[in-house]
Image (cartoon, rainbow over all chains, first blue to last red; front, top):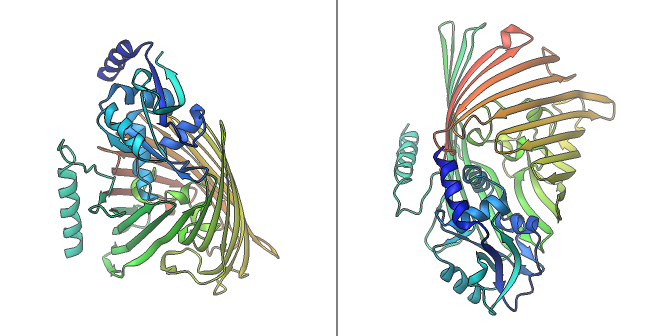
Length: 136
Length: 338
């Protein structure tokens, strides 16, 4: 019940907000489908062309991360936890985690192949939008 | 005994840290070593089995394993060292036997090279990418204490050689694996077949929650333990996994040039997530074998229940109901990944 109320609470505040998956503006990474974004953040797709991909998550309590996991990954937090425990056995790590949109964008500007998700309003000309979604 | 105590102490230490907000460690996720491309982890399992009809009992400290892995640019590596059946005590009708295996064995040791977004080359010793069960074969990650017989009757669990995998992405995933071994195993103590050749191909199709797979291959045993040492196999598998339940099934056959060795061996298993902590399981297994000593056929049902206080820790109970009552079993286990 608590989870449902929390979900409703976050949905209310995020309703209609737009988000974007971004990389640095001069990146060779092409636009992505929702399925490809999922593949990258589950570390099933590790490269794009010759570029090693570095997906970046926001911290677990971040509302945008909750929207990303629900809308793009389509997986509950518990299922994601079990997924990454299994991946640990296979020698794979979950994405890096950063606390703020600012640190995500700052990292992306510096590191080739890094990809993060932020509110669309945070994106400026220094970034390339790879995928957009709107909270329903 | 000292090793077990140290191991339990380590688990307690790591588990004790889980709820500390400023700790970066989470149980079941390993620990990074400084700034090196190195993560350390492991797993542990212990189980008890009783066969009521024959009054035979067994207690094991089965797996004590250590993982080390990491990645750098296009390369990644994985190593797994393991004590298997570290301590085994069996007793029935007043007779007791104890066995200890305290040699650390190489379970997996490989290097991956990501050539591009589709192609990965693996070199070393790895879990044969056959079916779904064999990819996650350890107690803490599987649904039941026991493993289905098809996962040990049909194909070699481990391959020491190369694996070339090609992954195609769209709204669906198609993965093709080519595996090849033409040498001795690094360490074949735990392999179900002691082989010096293994060639195989596998195709996996996945879309949303559904995944289908077909494997076929050939292997050569070093010693003639079966009627022939040139053996072929096929295995078809399916998996459906969503937030509420998971269904898995595998059906395989094994043969040589003279005919069928294992006409069929397979299972279908369903697991329902009442919550993430409470997981009832039911599995139906059936096989027919022309090479096993004793009973050539069996059908049985496994009723299991798993309690996971957190995902990387599992308390499991299961009851096996066989056609032949003498084979009915009760199993309990505790396993943890750190």
